[in-house]
Length: 395
Length: 118
Image 1 (cartoon, rainbow over the protein chains, first blue to last red):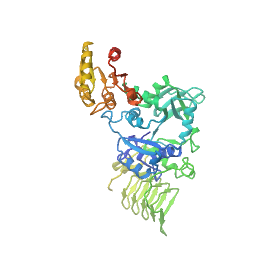
Image 2: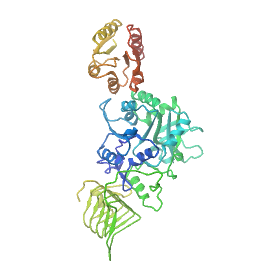
Image 3: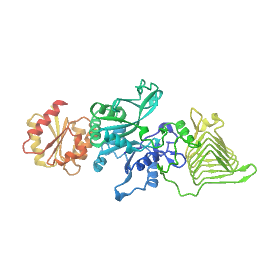
Image 4: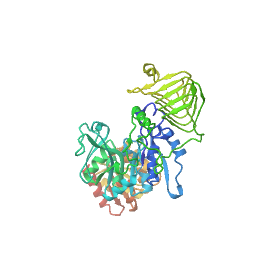
């Protein structure tokens, strides 16, 4: 069950019209593609994605790109919007989201439930985590990753014994328990859980019948540590990239950096591994092309990711990510930027350190990212100076 | 006086429970199906719910979820002729599961027990 309802408020305005899992990443992907691909590559093919806010874009993407499983074989990727079957509220927390879908779970009655977030970018073989869960005879297994101690306010921090059994779980502590022998590191929860279904349902019901915040990290897991067998699973044992790459891309700056990693010669996130394909929906458009080769007017893209359907027509692109159908006109210059699907950059326009959302038309000669005082008047500009030009804007 | 809501579609049984529980000293509210039960929950503010499962209009398993969604902590007793519902996940949200019988002593004991606990 993938929790795909994240509002991603810190990614605004990229999340103005879509939930965080539906935000584009790496040219052709949406953030949720990584979790969904991990599932398929791990032979997990009965998948529910739970949505609530701004779910149309995500729903459409899953319909277009993930209609690839076999219904006769009992496989599915199904989007479940908040149905308000139990009460009239939105999901109040991650645990509430699962509890409110208890009737759906009842119909499937699996032995184990894997709870995932649709917000993260990583490559992981969940089968290894499930194997550990079974070997430890656990009720709950939580995937963990080492993070710097200074980031403890952003994570659920875990304390384990030598056998990996979880002794403590603190949500976003100021003074975290550090890893034994590694005072600069903490063991952070990745929001990936394997539950025995029966244990989970019983604990979710207890939680639903109490006045908690109905959150796995804040309420359910701390309560389970006292009563059940709860174990940690080291992400590195299931990591398919070998670089322990896992990104939350929760902020515009983090999103920008994670995208920029992909234009390096050897990115930390390897998208070229045929044994772990990342699937997505791609529009049926022709291959990218670069045209014009005459004095002062050469269509080029260097250190860049260029998706299908792009035409770089006499402009220059450097260190950038171009989603499908981007058009760069003559004499335009694009540097260190992310251009989402259908963006059109007019002649002589100059763009640097910017994220341009879908279908935006940049007029001839416009400059973005060169005068942040000017940019701030019209666009979102982050602390590190990334300019975000939102969808639907008319320039 | 503690207030008990009886949710039961069979009129004869509903009357029987009502009489018996009044005799035990409770104030009694009744509902003939889940939808009426939700209304009674809001209007009558009961302290405990006795809930049949197989009912027309809205069945007990659906009603149970709605009740928990509205009143997280209200004690609920599932009262049914069928034991198979014990396997339904939602039935685990009830505080007790009583199989219907001509002898109401188990049901009464559970009511007393749960109201004292609360």
